[in-house]
Image (cartoon, rainbow, N blue to C red; front, side):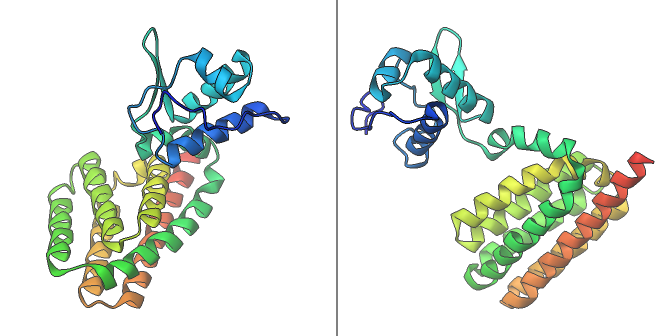
Length: 241
């Protein structure tokens, strides 16, 4: 559907117009009718298409801007953002940073999702891809004394695992949760012992994947997430004392 022609949309006529309009516009993005970099039609055209007032439209656009879904360029129109996980999750990252008690639930979710990713990678990956994982672990070793660089390589390692799983939904969910966990982990990852433990965990995960032992890969990832949670909670506790 051309972005300039949304005439096929059904006008919104019920209560909660702002929320419904946000959902409708998000739907256009998720179905690919609106793609990263696309410019939205002028405000007047959008308001007429959905048969809502311009104040209602502006409120919906503000909500989408806060979520990082759209970018308002002063004097240049409204565009769909590049939809990177780090941008879309920024508001939630802020929320969870304020609610440190949620960290345990975050890692509960990561264990479920990344554990399954590791299991699928064991079934679906190939030798060349496994070599890439080993190369990323080697890069982690080289970055042991540079925490910020290490975190980047660590993120790349988990992203590559997600790709090997062959399930984009799981992969994207894992990336989003990884973004949320970064704020909690920053201080913990400054400790050389924590980094060494993570690298050792990664080796065990890849060894299980190479053996194509899905159950062992899943358990190795769960153990890794437990270690990350423990070090994160310990650091948070020390910070509060």
